[in-house]
Length: 497
Image (cartoon, rainbow, N blue to C red; front, side, top):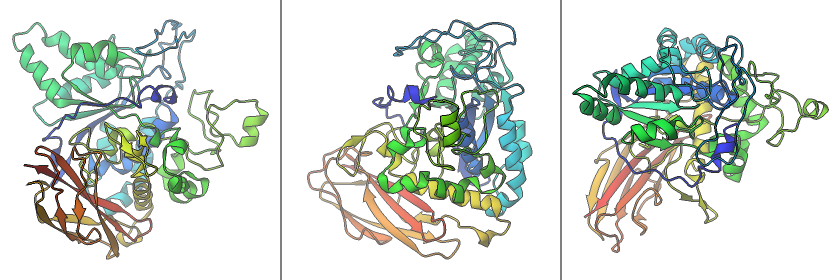
């Protein structure tokens, strides 16, 4: 249902805030600290499956049930009638219900982690840093789910977020808002209530604002607009909504990538791949979210027509993609070399705060993420194959890139830079190399000359009309020929002085 919010968000541009210390050292690897808050919609379920397959790349601090304007549990007795329309909303929601699309005994997060538990022995063969199922289970909490925008009382979920924001680890906490932000808002409210009148309030406020980074698919219960932003204006808020990963993916990605949404590709690479793949929602899969009478996606086209259902999205072929609407919130945190988490305007698999130029020459908000869609889908398919493979050589693994020079460099207008990279291919696959300039992510309108764009060693000629203070972004992209192929990158930034 997040489709209703996307159109109003496509023009939003975020402040170019940089976090130099955006991750945490863990077993020799740099991992961002992450809290997931999600409601029981099928796109959240699908996003969680992808998240779990990348959980070796994160320090998961919380998996929290949350409410939104489309999903709330209710208190079992009270009829909830008043839900005011939010900022920039032209509709007024008025529910005469005691709950909204919330199943009795809802435990979809638990179910996803239980499926992960079944494939964990295979996953650690391919990456030893996958968290144990017991660890992930210990991070599950119920947040503020009674009503939409519910932030009246502390909950296990809000208390967990509060404790993380106040702990002694100064590294940022990425708060992923897949639902409404009321649980996050309650955590902040509790901190305010406890400390605002104390002599150390200023230091507490500064500490929390430095640590909290909210990465959200819109404001789904208006608690960001009505509480967080007015009372915690210095918390970084990254709006990550994009059509590329949602119900509108069919309209958002490039024509040559539509095969990655097809029934055939999705069945062969995702939904047929073990316990996690089985839970991944696709068209006409016979599944249904608990308590959600509006979930018609599991029905065949014939059943939908015979039942007189009027779908709000075009009916697709059996096994085809439905949605992973919230996946964009964590894709830039994956350590794939694009460094998309360092600055909201830099971009990566999850898109960026800015508008890219599509191949047709037109400005396209979704292209910032769509340009990487094939790479991300193939990577996801490879990880699902990991979940099915008890031997390392039964699946593909990403190439590893090392770089001789610093990732941040300086150069004068008209200067040249020699760049040298090296690749370790864990499966001894062949690979292709491409250097390209990410012009939209940089501030230099002039185009650099790349001497050998298909070689690991290349010479970069800085344009003479580059201006002092310009930033140039160069991407080294390496793709192996494994099945499915996997791609990694190195982003180099060049400051003109």
